[in-house]
Image 1 (spheres, rainbow over the protein chains, first blue to last red):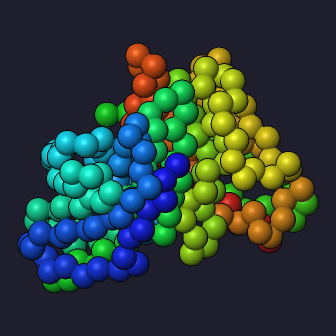
Image 2: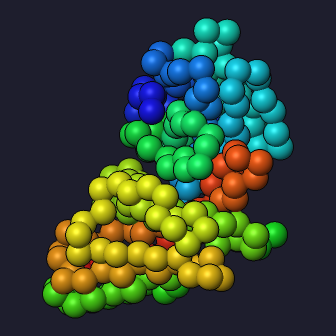
Amino acid sequence: DAKTTQPPSMDCAEGRAANLPCNHSTISGNEYVYWYRQIHSQGPQYIIHGLKNNETNEMASLIITEDRKSSTLILPHATLRDTAVYYCIVGKDGATNKLIFGTGTLLAVQP
Amino acid sequence: AAGVIQSPRHLIKEKRETATLKCYPIPRHDTVYWYQQGPGQDPQFLISFYEKMQSDKGSIPDRFSAQQFSDYHSELNMSSLELGDSALYFCASSSLAGGIQETQYFGPGTRLLVL
């Protein structure tokens, strides 16, 4: 599975958009980009995933570059409850898709 | 919507004791994953099961074993507990549909403390 690189921490003002970057330069053609978040000691929460097209759901938007070597998770209007560690994970769909967690980005939403 | 259920939520054991953690997947999910998260660390994959068969194995100690039952619930058995086994243990579930493994959803975790 491809390795991902994320900044260790970011700050965001409440109500503003949070843009979380992820580099995955060794991603292969059949690998997806998944985003999960973990709010202090709770179970990781699925946010969104994509292959090559941009994706949007009720939680966030995922922007994947054309070469697929990086992506950005966008939380359009961050709230204090969005403070969490955000994990960008690259993996394949298939008979098993264990998630390999890296170090993630600690997003601190400030009032 | 129904979520992944884990029991117990908290567990305290002594060194060298045994522990059993249980996981009840989301209804109609056929795949279960176990992850371990030590203090200040990121979750690490331990083992997974699909249709009651082990499908993948990660960094799971030989002292640990797991299985998935006919009702798809899973149990993680941990023997000869060590202080270093103190961690959060998460179970996740997903379903295989049309040959594609769908999104993995996590339970709230079991916090194990070994004294």
